[in-house]
Image (cartoon, rainbow, N blue to C red; front, side, top):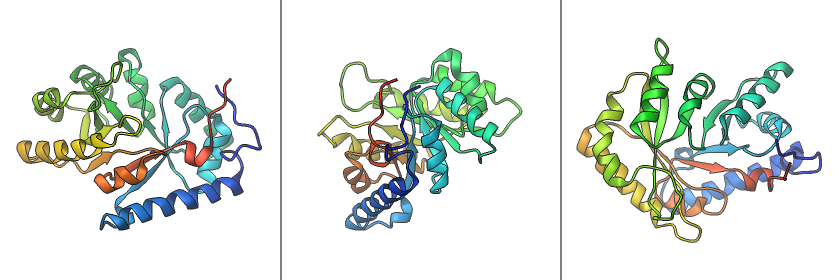
Amino acid sequence: MPACGPGAPGADPARLAERLAAVRAAIARAAEGAGRSPDEVELLAVTKGHDVAVARAALGVGLTALGENYVQECRDKARALAEEGAPAPRWHLLGHCQRNKARLAAALVAEVETVDSVEIARRLGAARAGEPPLPVLCEVELTGRPGRTGFTPAALRRELPLLTALPGIAVRGLMTVAAPGDHAAFAACRRLRDQLADAHGVPLPVLSMGMSDDLAEAVAAGSTRVRIGRALFGERRPA
């Protein structure tokens, strides 16, 4: 697992508190500039690629929702925090969920933001049998860039009724990633969410859009959750 030394901002409580205040101020400016309340925008702290010291520091400054890309890395951090007696974060899975990791993910995380197929959704739901439904977001690919995962808008329009009918999961909204320097995906995702909610009569309150470099544009376009890593914790360090 990549390390974050004691001098890095992510592991230093004072520096992290300063960065957190700056991020919250940026969210507030963006929201107010768009005629929105800052309270409409949730901050998800992305600890992926950092060691457990960063997750511990995040909890120490009141960041209780943490995002990870890999199920195994999330599991290891969760175990380490539990052994220390630290409060359990609400983990969000932000990376592609492999089929053979669906059962572990369903048991470990509070929300999966990257459901990109009915098959993955079905596997997650099956793993929650007899338990409360797992909140999920549908990942949407709107950039046209090769190698990106996510539903196309046409596929999601077709598959959403199947997804919302699956037992064991609760579809809460959409998630997308914009191409660097091109923020058109944010407005497109907002429009798609509105169209889907109207067409299918389902509430889709969450729009997870925006990261450290484009949170202002995402909030202006209607994001209700920004996923912030580098602006809080600094660059991830190689193992």
